[in-house]
Image: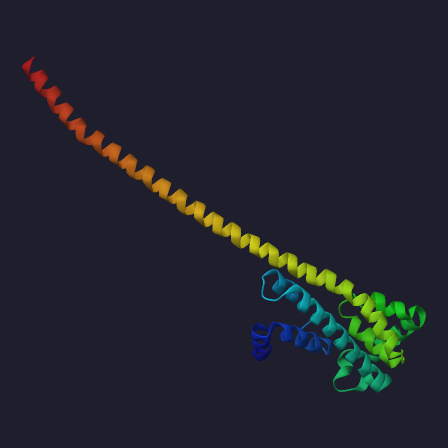
Length: 214
């Protein structure tokens, strides 16, 4: 989707928010990848930390609540919906309902950090008519941990790239100096060798003349 890439490039804050919303509905923009991208953009100075983190946090809560609301709206019919049946199968929904009955709100707090399971859990929470405010509270508490890990990973990666670039620049400078030194040594060697070769025949001719006189 080149138009999405253009949004991220020219409007990075809006682009990150849009990617989070799309990723929540099974578009090929995984949430974790978007968070890593956010950390990378912060590290490379493309976006500022505070507004980026605030916007990403809002994007996470918005996308999560949207998925939850879909579960509340369609209930168990979600497994036959032409769009959302791809997210959760009837068998998976039954399994998650059993876990949800056992663990309750902990299912949201713990399961949110498992990629591939979080959307299924949020839909299940909606299907089971979890109170919206309770869901939002649980999600608001646990989402920062996901952000810390993924945005942090992207930030570290971006910083590492910056360091590598600086090191490459230093290496290039050292390499240039080294080449200049090697060329200078080679030219000096050729000069000395040339002088020796040019003086050697004169000495030999003088020796031959001296030998004839004797």
